[in-house]
Length: 298
Image (tube, rainbow, N blue to C red; front, side, top):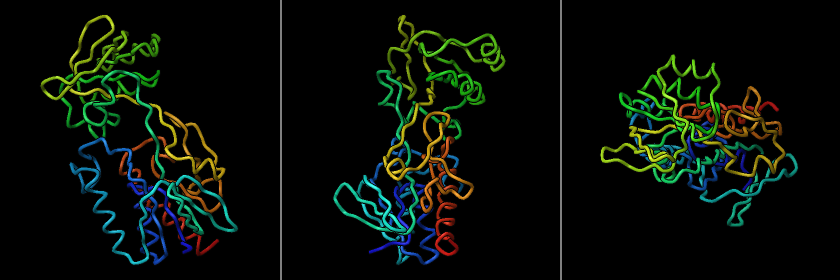
């Protein structure tokens, strides 16, 4: 079957794009590998009307609502190959299935490259966090840490000081200059130059940060900004242009969510530097609308 639109990625951006096309009575297929980026988080916050719910529960509802439209379909699988075919595109999954469509929305997300600190990966999405707007309120009012991944950690620490008493753990990543130290002092952020040897859970649900010199520090949560990489090769296979974002590559899009390849749209974390559910839903919805309108007017 030839679809009007294929959406690759069935998380918040992808489902938001798909439902717009389905409501326009277009045949839309979502291909999803079932690995949303926020699968490590127990709760989602800051998303209007859904505050405190598990991300998986929100997505379960969204899939049911999408499939209530007769022209929508979801296929479980990893889309690993994309090519232009005539005036459309063909997507092939790791199971060998091939699907064609006139338009594509890439909502393929990014993969986090976590700092190489023992114990960090086990606590990712729980007490090691990325976004203070998503999780800061729940850990606010006590000692917090920021684990540096580069000089941008100064900016991150200044911001997170609104949620608690912050220590910036440099972990050997950089040495702040006089201007940066003054900025940290203005926000009452302590600077810790020592390397971080290990993270361990404490008895109160927080973390013990063990330093290379044997000292230990307790924090309610540790924020960090890991580098990102594309979670899928499809944008590259199709010849889409990338720009360098805050923490890694970003698919370049225009003001209507279209990539540099006509007919290919992108949304979600892969197509912007700032990431949260609300941004993903907004970008996905707009990508779905614009992809549909291109079928009418282009």
